[in-house]
Length: 134
Image (cartoon, rainbow, N blue to C red):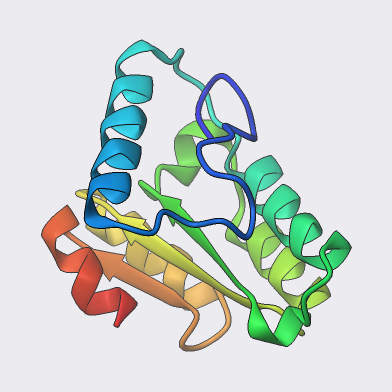
């Protein structure tokens, strides 16, 4: 998602990139998109949409994962952690997690404390993402 839309179709659902070259091309596309997108936020709509895609899919929701990546800039866009928690609770049969990549450390910690235990994670820099995702 971005300021432009709650769904940016970078890969087909259920068809992740297979090779390192495919993953590199995906990252290049994502990077290029961020250079030209408008400001704005579709975090909640994108999260709901991702969970909805799992519900509508043909796989067992318990075998699926939805990860919300965010800069934790909730105050700016008037997003309330209680809304994210409510959405997670409504879809408790899906493995959903929030990953906050943020220099807004205090805000990210506050958000994490309002979400279900073990399902919200913090990173100060993008290089921490593989450690958290493991």
